[in-house]
Image 1 (cartoon, rainbow, N blue to C red):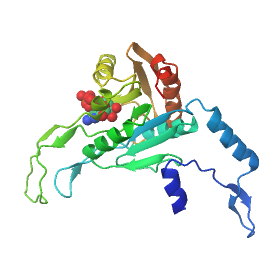
Image 2: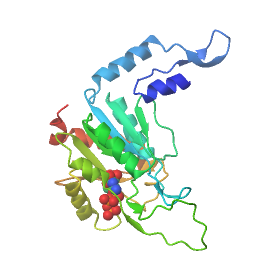
Image 3: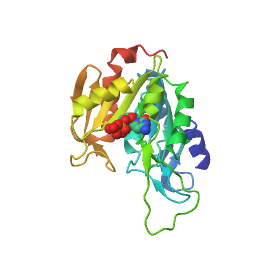
Length: 266
Ligand code: CTP
């Protein structure tokens, strides 16, 4: 199991065994996969619409240290990012995920780079971005960092923490964009369309996916979500309340119809 985890996290695609009667007499998972299943798996990989593409996905929340034991973070679970990684994998892409803190396990068959802080995420993404065709920035990056990181564990009765804005990773990657295709995520509570457009421009993205926070079953810690997708020319669509995997496929369907996606220099 450990070996399978290791190779699948390096990006190797694994055809899982079938379930049924085993040589030892048990009924369990452990049979060689049926030939037909193996053929279908291989055919899907070659038929898939993303088969030439290297897709980089950032996932989960980052942590910022306040002192040696306390951090500030956010409620991102990583579910949306992993759903996107899985959807890209199933379209035949070579997928790399840069994962901050998540509360769910990554899908198999993708390369995973684990990070903790915003600075670590930034470093890992900049390194992986060079060899990527598509970036999906689904991570919830902590946009504030402590102005002072205490070197000893704080024990005072009260503690006032000053926070300053940290690096905007997506904006930095946007400056190195070239012919890559970039998808950003956003949480907006007011002037949604105007803010989405501003973010698209500022971060040099091709699509901005806005989480409709506040609607039942949407965004943090849910398996479902409702999003609105914007391109620089305006609103494209709003989804229904759907599973994050279904939403991931809608996002990639929308992306693959855009001219800038067809111009990726893969
Ligand atoms: N993002 C990033 N680095 C940050 C903050 C955000 O890369 N320091 C990315 C997010 O991963 C997301 C997009 O930028 O894909 C938009 O994030 P959001 O938090 O909505 O936007 P902000 O730029 O932080 O703007 P604001 O908080 O003012 O709405």
